[in-house]
Picture 1 (cartoon, one colour):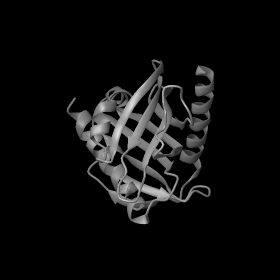
Picture 2 (cartoon, helix red, strand yellow):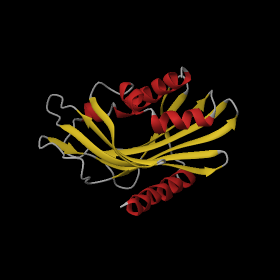
Picture 3 (cartoon, one colour):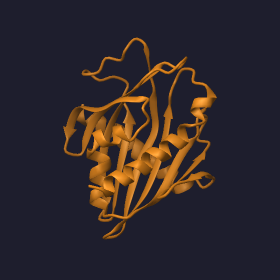
Length: 206
């Protein structure tokens, strides 16, 4: 099974590296304190692929540790809709299975999502964290009243600028599945940017 997870995350890495290298028609959506978020149409998905870029004023290892290991703090920085974000299986020191759950709201059902997360040292100055969708896991039972969303693409690239600065690039596309009003999906990019800005403020305090 470990080899299967490695194959899945390697496929994600290959795809997100191609996106990073070849897609140029990004539309700027919003600027934050540290970051800027963009989006673009990708393949035939109904939701758009987002890209967040910026510079974090601290060293690359501190940033990598935060985004790979500080799951509880990251959950607290997400929308109140996110009720659960926890590791259900540690595969090895650089990979694990994670489960996320969002609560239902009005006519929108709750969502559950299973991913394998892997941290990869691309070079002496670059690290990437990829997430790949997993349909099932022996420790996870999807609730009958939930819809299982799917991660279509996720890659978080960290590049060392110098000892005190790290460039961050996040590529993200999640298919929520089922029916969700546009009034909610239109706010996904804002929520993503706000969460990452909170992450940066949190990690700078560590």
